[in-house]
Length: 294
Picture (cartoon, helix red, strand yellow):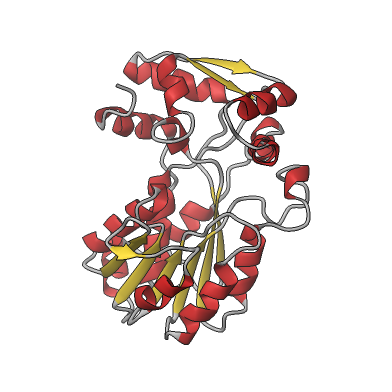
């Protein structure tokens, strides 16, 4: 756990010189890459289309991406069985000395995500792999991202004026991806994070309608939240081309919001960074200035 001021953090940067970020062009990955480079850390942004070629499905790309790397931020592929254990083994064999894994809130709670996730998950497989790797590790467990409303799966519906979800009147302490990335950067570059599991949330619980109201206050873009039954939501996803299994997984993934299991505010951001997580009002202003809902 670290609560140092910024000057102390800068002075305490470890000797790890090169960091690999898998998923380096994604929501959290690209923010982590930017944060590392702002600190002057040699960083490889790895993805299928990125500057460092990396494909979870093609193990021949792993070795070159890991060559000469001291630390890795693992943004895993959410498929089962997970490729993360094999990647961790390759990383350690390549000389990597620190692993920071992006996992998910609730992976250690039975039934958290509904019946589709029973029998283990890619996240639990990844966590077990880094814990037993023999090198320094940190695990990040964020909840639902605020960025789903500004650059993710909910954006088109928000722009269209109606967001229909099977989340009922439930709430979540939605977390800003900028905070997730800031914690990842700290864990990759500072001492004091080894063996830590950071549960990451925002500073207050909000229902989906509350989030849409916050967006409307700042932008004037007003979208209605329409609660729908799980069965109707699944059927709609299948009609859009998803398989029945994919539709069930996506529907069950929203269970923690529907049941308000995501509502409790956690202390991970404060423990890792020594400050509170960013509030939704600040997120909306920044995303609006970047043109998210135009």
